[in-house]
Image 1: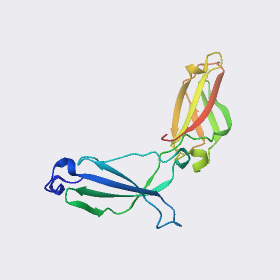
Image 2: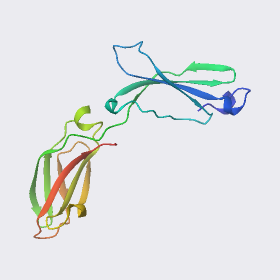
Image 3: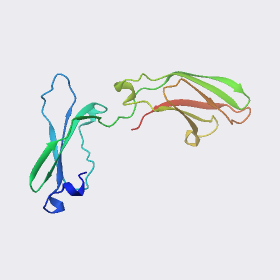
Length: 172
């Protein structure tokens, strides 16, 4: 937000911002900007719905402040990404090995780090596990951060058959 000294001589409610954005496309340097005006000197963010199919895409943004005297200069252009979508890819070839009497190793083929599969940036994987005699809603889980293909589940009961699955997650 603008510093108080930059409000001008008018009322505080005469201060605001014009926020511009467009999808980043090197073939459309002079492409049309979308715009939204927000009132209020203390405003420091906005959000807008760009469409379900436009998840995790780079956008160019710039901001222009105004007060009762008129519009100020545009900021430099900054690159931001639209929100992530839930991942649609799933880990493949999930397998386990006995580690000891109360632990198992879990292996999988990771989800490709593509916009289409990951829906954004993969933050990690979650191993869900539960006793095969119990309802899946009783599952416990352990998270592993990063683009990994292995996890160790410890503290299991002795001589109990477990069901496991692995899921990928991002920030959505």
